[in-house]
Length: 342
Image 1 (tube, rainbow, N blue to C red):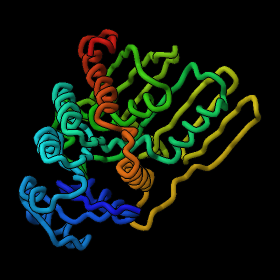
Image 2 (spheres, rainbow, N blue to C red; image 1 turned 45 degrees about the vertical axis):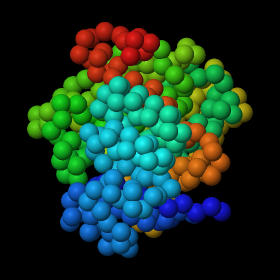
Image 3 (cartoon, helix red, strand yellow; image 1 turned 45 degrees about the horizontal axis):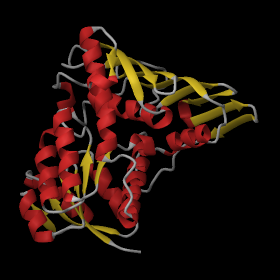
């Protein structure tokens, strides 16, 4: 098996999960780290035994010449870093949200296309094993032709304690969380032709929206509801589970709380527990997301070895980003947005 040398830029909150997953993946070593915060850089380097540490990304890439770079920084730095890697001919993984604007996203995709280097967005929710299991059953025709669906993420979990900057942005739940749930809807049901959205801010201590409800029309005629909330108080909080309901021409599928999948189809009833494994470095309740980080990073290595385009390539993620932009445009204007206009 070919072994790859990777480098990571950005040693913050979520990057630690990525470093754990790289350590578990086969045929890869992260040989260098970069962060402008010396304390954060030292903590990550010490934790994972990575001695080559840099405060400047260009200097690291020039010195180390890695086989790929994992950009785990905040969104404002993505375009310059992706374009830097492209100029140097280095394959790129970029954290979501991919870009500040559609123009930036398209520019990054074009830079990597011209340079002939792979580009993948670390859009990992569709790689959760429960979501993959739902997709497999749809593809197998377990409920016939789906015609209606709901993809839901509702919680009262305090996400601000670990990521306080989330409370400061004028955009919050659609851009930070809804992008994942919209991507799941695309993954399961195909591309979207039009979208209508409504948003609310329930928590007065934040600046952005913390509730969003979106209605999507898909190309094959299916209608889906995508709803997200960080203001929902439940007796048992399902964070960070995504709950799914799908009605099809010959049956129904429900992925409920506790990762319980129930399929009622022409072939009979299936009820199964899809609880994700608890990886040695993972912790509840984050373990489903942490599992998906390992899955998407293994997918990246598979694509590098086989010359395949990643499932969540930059080109693919532009379509998910367009849904986010359409949702904000719809909520602001109180009208339905035709996706061809985004």
